[in-house]
Length: 171
Image (cartoon, rainbow, N blue to C red; front, top):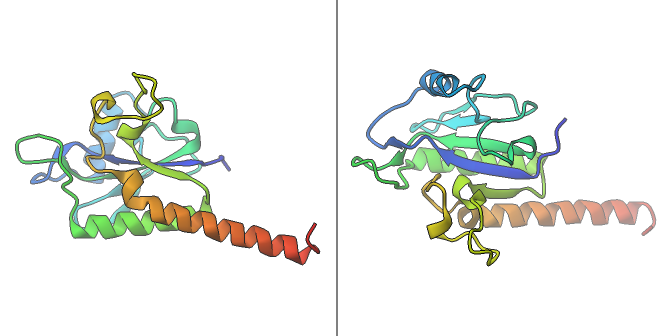
C-alpha cells in the first residue's frame, strides 16, 4: 500500500449548467495522454461518488504530488460565463465532506487542500497567495473548509496512540 499524506480536491473546470459523465471525464484524460481518469474519486452534481482509479494506483492529478496523494474531483467549477466559481450542489458538498471524513479515518494525518494550494510560492514568503495560483481549482478554499475534519482525525490518532502507550505500561 502506498503512503498517503495528502488529499487534493479538484474541479472539472466545466460550467455549472453542463454535465460531464465519468466516461467523458475518462476520455478527456485519455486524450491528454493519461491511462485513464487521473483522479481517484469523482463526485457528480447529484452527490454520487464514483471510484475512477483505485487508491492503490498513483494518480495523475497534480504534478509533483501524485505519488503520496489521493485526488478527488467534483463536477463543475465554472459559472455559466466560464469564470471560476464554487458551483458545488448541496449534494456534492455533503458527499465530498463524507468522503474526506472516511478517507481521513483510513489515512489519518493527511493534509487536505485544493489543487491551487500546491502552486509554487513565487515570492518565497511561505504562503501560496491568490496571485500565485497556477489555476483556481477547486474554486473554493478546501484547506479552510475541511480543517476541522483534519483536526478531528489528528486528535483521534493521538488518543489511539495514548491508549496503546497505556496498554504497554506507559513505555
